[in-house]
Image 1: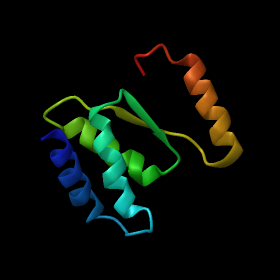
Image 2: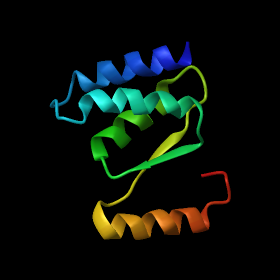
Image 3: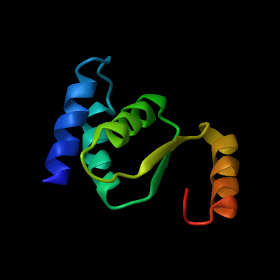
Image 4: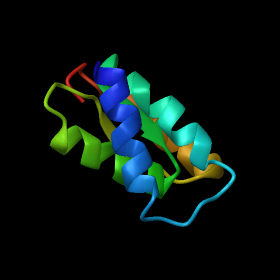
Length: 88
């Protein structure tokens, strides 16, 4: 049931945004928020929608964190991993 809720919530949030090539994949990726503590992405729309789901869900979901794209994002990812104590 959590995955169905996440998918429906993402579809609802996506209906308020411009559709892109990545839109269908966002809901598929978001269902994994039920299984993780955090998810990291350079897609600001995905992060915003995932965090809205995190705030509204009637169960625990991982939080999404935004990093930059490209080489800077890779550096940010490694910094995040190095600083992470598991609580994100």
